[in-house]
Length: 254
Image (tube, rainbow, N blue to C red; front, top):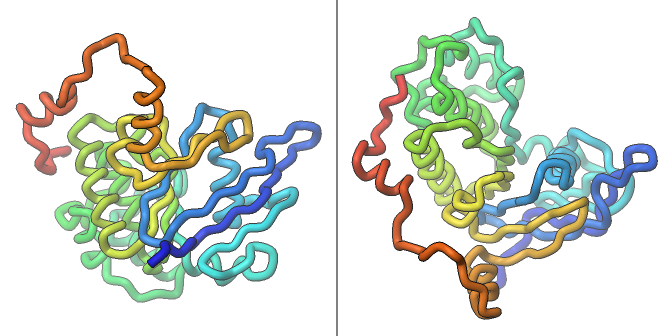
C-alpha cells in the first residue's frame, strides 16, 4: 500500500519585499514518518515550517495539512498539529504541573499533568519550575506541551541544539517513540548525524530551493556510487558512541 501524504506543499513562495526567502518549494510528508528539513541558516527552513504551521502567511502556492487547505481551514489545521515553542513561551515561575494545566486550558482539553509528564520521563519534576530545569529537561517538557492536543503531526525546530550527548540520545529515543505511537514528526536540525539516525526521509533546502529529497541511506549510497571517498576512514562507531557507552544514557540531568 502506498504511503499517504499528510502534508502536501506545492509551489510555495514567500517574499519579504524584494527578497524571496522560499522559492517555489514543493514536497510531501508521509503519514507516520520522521521527515527532516535540512539546510544552512537562512535557507528558508523555518519560514517554510512557520507557513505550514499557520504562523506566517505565504505569498503564493498551495498547502494541504491532513486533508485541509491552509487557505480555507487554518482552524482545523491548528487542532491537528503540535508546535514546539521556543523557551521564551513559558512562564518561568510556574511549575511543570501548572504549565500543563495552563496549556490544557488553552486547548480546551482536560489532560492531567502526570499523564503528560510521564510521556517525557519528567514526573519527578512535576513541582519544579521551568527555569530550574536542565537543557534536556526543558526540551522534553516543550515536546510534552506539543502533545497535549493529541496532534496528528508535531513540528520540532532544532530540538537538540545545545544539549549534551546523553540528553541528545534521550531526545532521539523520545522522538522515535512519538513516531512509533502514530504521530508524524517534522524536524529541522543542523546536525547531519542526527538526521541520518532519526529521519525516514530528508529534504535539503538551500537558498530557498529544495535541492533533493530522499532517504538518508539512498542519498549516501548514491554519493558513494559516484566514487566519492571520505578522507578519514569511516569506522562503525564514533566518539559520541564511545562516550555514551562509557557513561551510560540513563536520565541523570539534574
